[in-house]
Image (cartoon, rainbow, N blue to C red; front, side, top):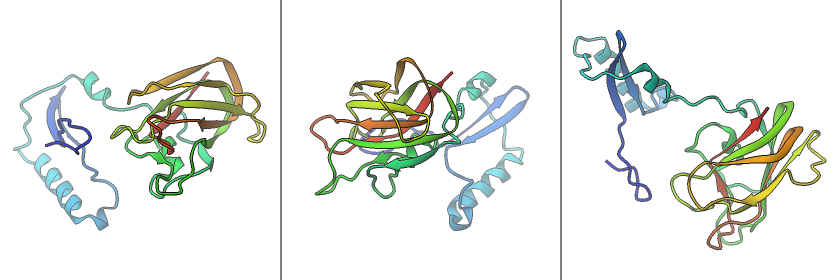
Amino acid sequence: MIDDWNTNRRLGLIFETRIGKGRLLVSGIDLKNNLNERPVARQMLQSLLKYMDSDSFAPRGSIDAGLVQGLFRKPSLLSNARLTMADSETPGHEARNVIDGNPDTIWHTPWDQGAPAYPHEFRIELPNRGQIKGFTYLPRQDMSNGWIDKYQVYVSADGQNFGEPAATGNFEQTRNKKKVLFDKSREGRFFRFVALSGFDGQIFASAAEIDLIIE
């Protein structure tokens, strides 16, 4: 099975294995949210639980615990942050998606006729002031539409006075996560990201995830 026409990857929705003295079943299907409105998912969960409680649940393969631990991402430093401003966004692709910890959700500016051109920006407020020494940017992973080329970022203590950019540069035109370190740490609680241009003449911008590197 392939996921879509943009990316051809092998997919495994469910797998089972022995790990140590236990048994493990991992599902890539959302079997937790809105089950009252999703009878198929609700039935899938019931069937899997019934299967795991039976003698038939006897995985033949085994894996090391470290491999399983590697499946989990560390919580983003922005997990308690909030978006305070975005110059433009498309319904369903709001700017808050860049700090939700989910690379499958994206921020995307409008692309229809009359859509605003570059620059595009959003601002993030941290719960506490910290020493910010850089950031990471993950482009959308399903296609290259909206990938950002040139950028500027700012750090502010009050969310009003941002001063000179903490960093200015160009991202490579790849889907890899980009890491940018400042020439020196900036103390602040507000982070402003400005996308100045895109690739291939596109006027819209997108991003999957933004994270901050804090001392």
